[in-house]
Length: 121
Image (tube, rainbow, N blue to C red; front, side, top):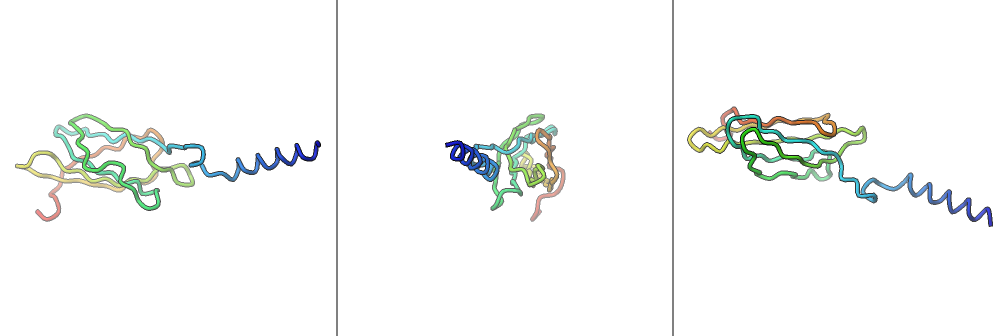
């Protein structure tokens, strides 16, 4: 009887150690996308650690000096990796921006902006 109990406990521990975080509903990590400019932006954010790469924001309007929290996937070392693009909302002076941001920690703030000519202009 004792052998069966020890075996059952050993099996349960092994299953817990081998189970993926997704089994337990791990939501990943949260970062904040912050527009600290004086104009509203349309922002798209990609989670570069997900497989395949996943859009976590798609043309989302972020007002001036506002922020949006998004959940992303950490890598094996616990860091997030995103890329983002942004376009301002002023059609008479259209500007764009974008950047790749690896090595993010849970709770980090990523500042987005649009201060360059848009592609094709």
